[in-house]
Amino acid sequence: MSLVHLIFRELRHHRANALLSALALTIAVALIVAVRLLTNAAERETRRVVRDLGFNLRILPRDVDPGEFWIRGHSDKTLPADAVQRLATGAGTFVSFNHLTPTLEGRIPLGGLEAILTGLGPSITGPGEKKQPMGFNIAVGKAYLGQTLANRLEAKTGKTLEVKGRPLTIERVLVESGSDDDMRLFTSLADAQAILGLPGRISEIKAIDCLCLTSEQDPLGQLRKELQRLLPEAQVLQMRTMADARARQRQSAEKYAAFAVPLVLWVSAGWVGVLAALNVRERRPELGLWRALGTGSLRIAGLFLGRAMLLGLVGAGVGYMAGTTVALHYGPEIFPVTARGLVAEPALLGWALLLTPAFAAIASFLPAMTAVVRDPAETLRAD
Amino acid sequence: MITCTDVVRNFATRPGAVAGLAGLSLDVAPGEFVVIQGPSGSGKSTLLLTLGGMLRPTSGRVTVAGQDLHSLTTSARTRFRATTLGFVFQLFHLVPYLTVRQNILAGLPRPDASGRARVAGLINELGLEERAGSLPGTLSAGERQRVALARALAKQPPLILADEPTGNLDPANAAGVFRRLDTYRRAGGTVLVVTHGPDAAPFASRVLRLEAGRITDVRSTAQVAL
Ligand SMILES: Nc1ncnc2c1ncn2[C@@H]1O[C@H](COP(=O)(O)OP(=O)(O)O)[C@@H](O)[C@H]1O
Ligand SMILES: [Mg+2]
Image (tube, rainbow over all chains, first blue to last red):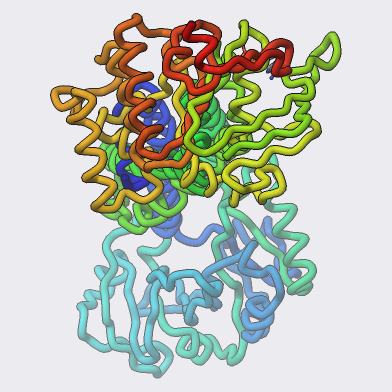
């Protein structure tokens, strides 16, 4: 009779033990699968929301007076354009800063009005970071127009606008933003440098932070320390509100996961181990018998470890489905913005099928080994 | 078939060492049906487990079927049990989740075609056809012991060791078990039965007495029968 056949018959016979063991494994797998799916969803959601929020860090020349900067909305001080490259190549940069976007700003007269000219260079993102379209990527000779400005100038997409003798094709008129963006003319960095007569200069680097620290952890202090090291001629201002809330939410979720997952693994391992020990205990006469029949230790170990692994396979399959079902059911409510990104991950099933039997075997190892080495004479002696 | 020389087996217990076997010597020739009688606690089970290579003697030599049992490696001893010994226990020791047929098949070291045929024959011979697909939990004591007997006989071992095989059976069933063991002996097997009751004696070619871990008295079949 094959080992697997034997194990199946035994599982069927000791149903309660088998079911409880499989349940422990199923719960563990389900929890891990659900946590994994929801953590990924939280990550996606955070990224997306942050992207929608826009940049929250402004890296300015050190000699800009923040008070004056906030009152005037911009400053005339500049940094060399290569500052962004220097920042990007610094070790640890992308932990603290990301989506580094060199920017040059200035007021210009335009059709009898005063407009804000903003030249945007290409963003530099951290390695491994998916290049997400963030901000604008404007080619030389093109321009995006704020809504109010476009109305005043009666400008339309496709028309050409001349700014200080440079022709710029209007590529897009932006929807009303309710901010000073409505009076902004966006161009490439090179065009802005030419128009403002500041070749090779930028007025700030816009960026976002990792959103991984809450205000109690003094993120700004850490950002300042980093920047002091990487780019001492600059200072950093952080727009805090939303990022703080996001970081807090994400951290608490991670804290729960970091606590709950190992706890559930330990509880489940203990549970499976105890059930395996009970199983071995109940089967001591059977063990003595296999010994007496001349069954090898390998096969006896296989009888018990194989049982654990088979239960592991069941736990993996059922747990994967349960975890996925739970995540797909509750996930979209919790993460509405990226709800559609939340889908089953079949790769997790593969991992579960691989790891759960191993986990169950390890949890059952000690009881199984006592079964193998136990003196069989005891149970056969019975008077 | 069996030679024991000055076999001692001590058990460590809290009050001190207890002797299960206290210098036991025994010779059993091939083709014998030896019954060892002894009261409870005299060392019967200890002797049988030692002969089966499942208990290591504290001192002394045990040779079974030409093998110095306890000088073999563990896996060689396991193989030896699988091929050479049949066991029958008082408590039957059937696997509760296997059917009657599967329990008997479990006695074969390799379930080849001739082994399977033998198992089918034993099921018929011992009147277990109706129960072949049943689990042991549903059988009577007599049926269970017949299953255990069939399991021991299936591999046609040169030696069968039985530990109070009829301790839980009524006289009719008990006699049936011993008759079958006698048939096996006539076909060339060797039987060693340990028991505290007298019911095996009529089938024995030799009856020995075990007391406090030692053989104390040797009687021939003729004397017992008279
Ligand atoms: N594992 C053990 N630990 C301690 N004492 C034991 C053990 N096994 C047997 N004994 C002792 O050895 C003696 C013989 O036991 P046993 O062979 O089971 O006797 P029997 O089968 O004749 O009733 C008894 O005194 C018993 O208490
Ligand atoms: Mg006994």
